[in-house]
Amino acid sequence: DSGVTQTPKHLITATGQRVTLRCSPRSGDLSVYWYQQSLDQGLQFLIQYYNGEERAKGNILERFSAQQFPDLHSELNLSSLELGDSALYFCASSGREFDETQYFGPGTRLLVL
Amino acid sequence: AQSVTQPDIHITVSEGASLELRCNYSYGATPYLFWYVQSPGQGLQLLLKYFSGDTLVQGIKGFEAEFKRSQSSFNLRKPSVHWSDAAEYFCAGLTGTASKLTFGTGTRLQVTL
Image 1 (cartoon, rainbow over the protein chains, first blue to last red):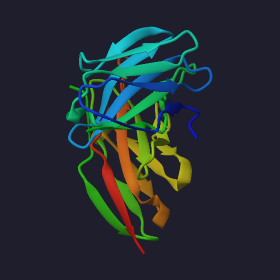
Image 2 (image 1 turned 45 degrees about the horizontal axis):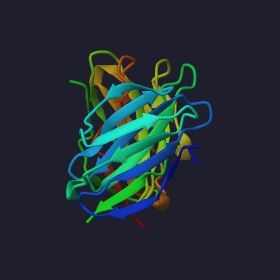
Image 3 (image 1 turned 90 degrees about the horizontal axis):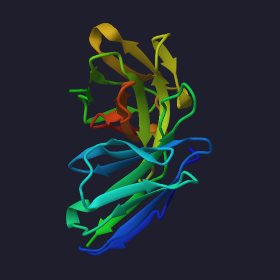
Image 4 (image 1 turned 90 degrees about the vertical axis):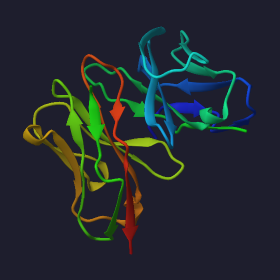
Protein backbone atom coordinates (compact mmCIF):
# COMPACT_ATOMS: atom_id res chain seq x y z
CA ASP A 1 0.00 0.00 0.00
CA SER A 2 1.56 3.26 -1.19
CA GLY A 3 -0.56 5.47 1.04
CA VAL A 4 -2.11 7.22 -1.96
CA THR A 5 -5.85 6.69 -2.30
CA GLN A 6 -8.05 7.18 -5.33
CA THR A 7 -11.79 7.05 -5.76
CA PRO A 8 -13.72 5.66 -7.44
CA LYS A 9 -12.00 2.47 -8.56
CA HIS A 10 -14.18 2.10 -11.61
CA LEU A 11 -16.34 4.52 -13.52
CA ILE A 12 -18.62 3.84 -16.45
CA THR A 13 -20.24 6.75 -18.19
CA ALA A 14 -21.50 7.91 -21.56
CA THR A 15 -20.00 10.17 -24.18
CA GLY A 16 -20.56 13.85 -23.52
CA GLN A 17 -20.71 13.40 -19.77
CA ARG A 18 -18.50 14.86 -17.06
CA VAL A 19 -16.77 12.96 -14.25
CA THR A 20 -14.59 13.80 -11.29
CA LEU A 21 -11.76 11.62 -10.05
CA ARG A 22 -10.44 12.09 -6.56
CA CYS A 23 -7.01 11.55 -5.07
CA SER A 24 -5.64 11.81 -1.55
CA PRO A 25 -1.84 11.96 -1.34
CA ARG A 26 0.40 10.30 1.21
CA SER A 27 0.49 12.05 4.54
CA GLY A 28 2.97 14.91 4.35
CA ASP A 29 3.30 14.95 0.56
CA LEU A 30 2.68 18.33 -1.02
CA SER A 31 2.82 17.34 -4.70
CA VAL A 32 0.13 15.51 -6.60
CA TYR A 33 0.54 14.27 -10.15
CA TRP A 34 -2.01 12.89 -12.57
CA TYR A 35 -1.16 10.35 -15.26
CA GLN A 36 -3.24 8.65 -17.94
CA GLN A 37 -2.54 5.09 -19.04
CA SER A 38 -4.05 3.93 -22.31
CA LEU A 39 -3.20 1.14 -24.70
CA ASP A 40 -2.17 3.43 -27.54
CA GLN A 41 -0.45 6.22 -25.58
CA GLY A 42 1.07 4.32 -22.67
CA LEU A 43 1.64 6.25 -19.44
CA GLN A 44 1.38 9.98 -20.01
CA PHE A 45 1.85 12.79 -17.53
CA LEU A 46 -1.13 15.12 -17.36
CA ILE A 47 -0.55 17.70 -14.65
CA GLN A 48 1.14 18.41 -11.33
CA TYR A 49 0.00 20.45 -8.36
CA TYR A 50 2.20 21.54 -5.51
CA ASN A 51 0.65 22.81 -2.30
CA GLY A 52 -2.44 24.00 -4.09
CA GLU A 53 -0.83 25.55 -7.13
CA GLU A 54 -0.36 24.20 -10.61
CA ARG A 55 3.34 23.39 -11.07
CA ALA A 56 3.65 21.58 -14.40
CA LYS A 57 1.45 20.66 -17.29
CA GLY A 58 1.80 17.80 -19.72
CA ASN A 59 -0.41 16.38 -22.43
CA ILE A 60 -3.64 17.42 -20.79
CA LEU A 61 -6.63 18.16 -22.98
CA GLU A 62 -8.51 21.43 -22.59
CA ARG A 63 -11.58 19.39 -21.66
CA PHE A 64 -9.68 18.17 -18.59
CA SER A 65 -8.91 20.25 -15.53
CA ALA A 66 -7.58 19.62 -12.06
CA GLN A 67 -7.24 21.33 -8.73
CA GLN A 68 -5.66 20.73 -5.36
CA PHE A 69 -7.52 21.74 -2.24
CA PRO A 70 -6.20 23.19 1.05
CA ASP A 71 -6.26 19.72 2.62
CA LEU A 72 -4.01 18.66 -0.32
CA HIS A 73 -6.40 16.23 -1.91
CA SER A 74 -6.80 16.67 -5.64
CA GLU A 75 -9.55 16.23 -8.18
CA LEU A 76 -9.29 15.64 -11.89
CA ASN A 77 -12.32 16.76 -13.85
CA LEU A 78 -12.97 15.27 -17.27
CA SER A 79 -15.74 16.81 -19.35
CA SER A 80 -17.37 16.29 -22.75
CA LEU A 81 -16.10 12.75 -22.56
CA GLU A 82 -15.21 10.87 -25.71
CA LEU A 83 -14.68 7.17 -26.30
CA GLY A 84 -10.96 7.77 -26.52
CA ASP A 85 -10.87 9.06 -22.95
CA SER A 86 -11.38 5.52 -21.70
CA ALA A 87 -8.22 4.76 -19.76
CA LEU A 88 -6.70 4.16 -16.38
CA TYR A 89 -6.05 7.40 -14.51
CA PHE A 90 -3.37 7.38 -11.87
CA CYS A 91 -2.60 9.83 -9.16
CA ALA A 92 0.85 9.97 -7.58
CA SER A 93 2.29 12.02 -4.77
CA SER A 94 5.70 13.09 -3.62
CA GLY A 95 7.24 15.82 -1.55
CA ARG A 96 9.34 14.41 1.17
CA GLU A 97 12.51 16.43 1.55
CA PHE A 98 15.33 15.27 -0.77
CA ASP A 99 13.13 12.59 -2.25
CA GLU A 100 11.70 12.99 -5.73
CA THR A 101 10.09 9.57 -5.67
CA GLN A 102 6.49 9.46 -6.83
CA TYR A 103 4.19 6.96 -5.16
CA PHE A 104 1.17 5.86 -7.12
CA GLY A 105 -2.38 5.20 -6.14
CA PRO A 106 -4.36 2.19 -7.39
CA GLY A 107 -5.91 4.15 -10.23
CA THR A 108 -9.40 4.85 -11.50
CA ARG A 109 -10.50 2.88 -14.53
CA LEU A 110 -12.75 4.99 -16.71
CA LEU A 111 -14.89 3.46 -19.41
CA VAL A 112 -16.76 5.79 -21.74
CA LEU A 113 -19.55 4.14 -23.71
CA ALA B 1 13.98 15.32 -25.90
CA GLN B 2 14.02 13.27 -22.77
CA SER B 3 13.09 9.66 -23.32
CA VAL B 4 13.18 6.24 -21.77
CA THR B 5 13.26 3.16 -23.97
CA GLN B 6 12.42 -0.41 -23.09
CA PRO B 7 13.41 -2.45 -26.14
CA ASP B 8 11.61 -5.62 -25.11
CA ILE B 9 7.82 -5.59 -25.27
CA HIS B 10 7.38 -9.12 -23.99
CA ILE B 11 9.73 -11.56 -22.25
CA THR B 12 9.08 -15.13 -21.18
CA VAL B 13 11.25 -16.89 -18.62
CA SER B 14 10.98 -20.14 -16.73
CA GLU B 15 10.43 -20.06 -13.01
CA GLY B 16 13.78 -20.16 -11.25
CA ALA B 17 15.65 -18.68 -14.20
CA SER B 18 17.43 -15.36 -14.04
CA LEU B 19 15.90 -12.21 -15.47
CA GLU B 20 17.20 -9.03 -17.01
CA LEU B 21 14.90 -6.29 -18.30
CA ARG B 22 16.53 -3.59 -20.37
CA CYS B 23 16.07 0.15 -20.03
CA ASN B 24 17.89 2.92 -21.87
CA TYR B 25 17.54 6.60 -21.22
CA SER B 26 18.23 9.75 -23.15
CA TYR B 27 18.59 12.87 -21.03
CA GLY B 28 20.82 15.92 -21.11
CA ALA B 29 21.92 15.29 -17.54
CA THR B 30 21.85 12.14 -15.44
CA PRO B 31 18.24 11.60 -14.50
CA TYR B 32 16.73 10.01 -11.48
CA LEU B 33 15.70 6.53 -12.59
CA PHE B 34 12.99 4.22 -11.35
CA TRP B 35 11.52 0.81 -11.95
CA TYR B 36 7.85 0.24 -11.27
CA VAL B 37 5.83 -2.96 -11.53
CA GLN B 38 2.17 -3.21 -12.47
CA SER B 39 0.26 -6.43 -11.85
CA PRO B 40 -2.92 -7.00 -13.85
CA GLY B 41 -5.62 -4.58 -12.77
CA GLN B 42 -3.34 -3.00 -10.20
CA GLY B 43 -1.53 0.26 -9.71
CA LEU B 44 2.17 0.98 -10.07
CA GLN B 45 4.40 -0.26 -7.30
CA LEU B 46 7.90 1.15 -6.88
CA LEU B 47 10.57 -1.54 -7.09
CA LEU B 48 13.69 0.58 -6.78
CA LYS B 49 15.24 3.92 -7.62
CA TYR B 50 18.57 5.50 -8.48
CA PHE B 51 19.42 9.07 -7.62
CA SER B 52 23.20 9.05 -7.29
CA GLY B 53 26.04 7.19 -5.58
CA ASP B 54 26.33 3.43 -5.73
CA THR B 55 25.42 2.33 -9.24
CA LEU B 56 24.01 -1.00 -8.09
CA VAL B 57 20.73 -0.47 -6.28
CA GLN B 58 18.70 -3.01 -4.39
CA GLY B 59 14.94 -3.03 -4.39
CA ILE B 60 12.03 -4.95 -3.06
CA LYS B 61 11.12 -8.52 -3.97
CA GLY B 62 14.74 -9.45 -4.66
CA PHE B 63 15.19 -7.08 -7.61
CA GLU B 64 18.28 -5.03 -8.31
CA ALA B 65 19.27 -2.61 -11.05
CA GLU B 66 22.58 -1.29 -12.28
CA PHE B 67 23.11 2.22 -13.58
CA LYS B 68 25.67 2.38 -16.39
CA ARG B 69 26.38 5.91 -17.53
CA SER B 70 28.57 4.79 -20.44
CA GLN B 71 25.70 2.76 -21.87
CA SER B 72 22.86 5.08 -20.77
CA SER B 73 21.24 2.03 -19.25
CA PHE B 74 19.46 1.05 -16.07
CA ASN B 75 18.70 -2.65 -16.42
CA LEU B 76 16.61 -4.54 -13.91
CA ARG B 77 17.74 -7.97 -12.75
CA LYS B 78 16.59 -10.80 -10.58
CA PRO B 79 18.63 -13.98 -10.04
CA SER B 80 15.67 -16.35 -9.72
CA VAL B 81 12.19 -15.50 -10.97
CA HIS B 82 9.04 -16.61 -9.20
CA TRP B 83 5.68 -17.18 -10.89
CA SER B 84 4.30 -14.23 -8.91
CA ASP B 85 6.73 -11.91 -10.73
CA ALA B 86 4.59 -12.11 -13.86
CA ALA B 87 3.53 -8.52 -14.46
CA GLU B 88 4.35 -5.47 -16.53
CA TYR B 89 7.51 -3.59 -15.67
CA PHE B 90 8.06 0.08 -16.37
CA CYS B 91 11.29 2.03 -16.35
CA ALA B 92 10.92 5.75 -15.76
CA GLY B 93 13.12 8.80 -15.57
CA LEU B 94 12.90 12.23 -14.05
CA THR B 95 15.27 15.20 -13.99
CA GLY B 96 15.62 17.78 -11.29
CA THR B 97 14.21 20.47 -13.54
CA ALA B 98 11.12 18.59 -14.62
CA SER B 99 8.57 17.17 -12.27
CA LYS B 100 7.04 14.64 -14.58
CA LEU B 101 8.07 11.03 -14.87
CA THR B 102 8.81 9.88 -18.39
CA PHE B 103 7.93 6.24 -18.76
CA GLY B 104 9.12 3.57 -21.12
CA THR B 105 6.54 1.55 -22.97
CA GLY B 106 6.82 -1.31 -20.52
CA THR B 107 7.94 -4.93 -20.69
CA ARG B 108 5.43 -7.65 -20.04
CA LEU B 109 6.99 -10.57 -18.18
CA GLN B 110 5.51 -14.02 -18.49
CA VAL B 111 6.76 -16.78 -16.20
CA THR B 112 6.37 -20.40 -17.21
CA LEU B 113 6.26 -23.16 -14.65
